[in-house]
Picture (cartoon, each protein chain N blue to C red):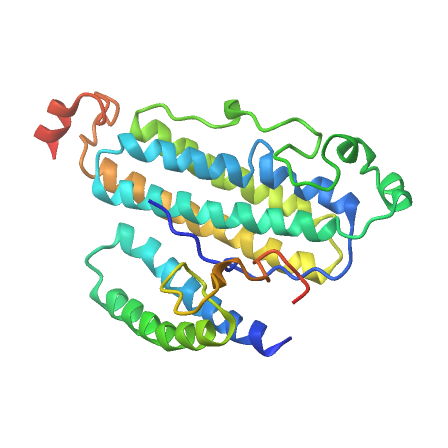
Length: 82
Length: 205
């Protein structure tokens, strides 16, 4: 696994934790322990996402800050070759 | 509104092509219990839901299904890379190939194009939630059946992830149904349509 893949996997794992908690909160909106847990995971996610985007390009469309539109760059999520 | 994230919900990295398997797995792209149907079912049913928790659940699960559609597309795409005409003929992929080459198209394993008759949006929340609960189980069984044909860990891993999500979604829809019936008359849940006969529902709530 490349360094890029490893970092992306960490991000994906945390993102998934948040997504799964979100679904739980949809039917248990008053669960404060779960709200706290969501915040914890979201807090961990933020610096990793920043680190990834700095190094490998954007995961969502955002401020570009350079002379070329980085969004178009390979790889796309279904590509296998980097 | 939707925002695209340039990442699959769960990684798909398949080393070895297998067009025979792609032909089966594509059923979860555009087949009767596939992810395309799942996403538009939930994203359509949500409009007539009478409670905020139900609107939220259908929106979020419908959105997650779009991730799953993308994962299935990636699996099919990766299983059909670098094929020779010989590979295509031997795998029985020729009938699909003649219409779509190796493009990803929403059809069932038997080649039937996606059909909206495989989903329902009835405008009655008890009916629609039962349809959604059944849909999750049907998709779960389809993944179980797909797994019977898989011997490549690169494929088994993401398919198992998708199967597990069907079970979680079933759980959440079950909670939706309970949240709804808690607000109805336990002697007769079917006295009126909570989405249409709003005056009755608001009195009950």
